Length: 189
Image (cartoon, rainbow, N blue to C red; front, side):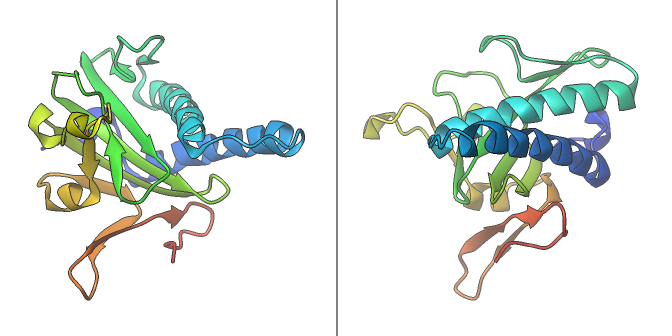
């Protein structure tokens, strides 16, 4: 179980972080991708969304909390580190609505912000959850490096906090993940 107050996260704070992230990514799209007719994979875009999200989170939470929230500078460091409470927070970003990918050889349990994005970098799902190594499903047997954490597992996980978007079971009992447009506060179709 995670304590949302431990990290200073509320729906309003997460919305502020997402709006800044969205602004940065829309500028990148307009000034680089569109301007130069560049096409890049969603995997790479997710990396960029992650960097923008971590930077926005670091800046906004440092101001709101009154102490440094440091973003990572290398893969060996946690994505975000809350200096006053001496706690890391990992961020996992995906452009899918099915699962997040982790590090196969990461052995430490962490609190995670799980983010799914789409649209014009304006539709998001964000949940805070504590995960142990055994929560991640290894895919090394399928010759895929990163273990997965599915929306079904998130739905079943106790103690999660969903800030933006929604998880629910449809008429057939299948878990659905809906992103929310941060400008209109409407769930995606």
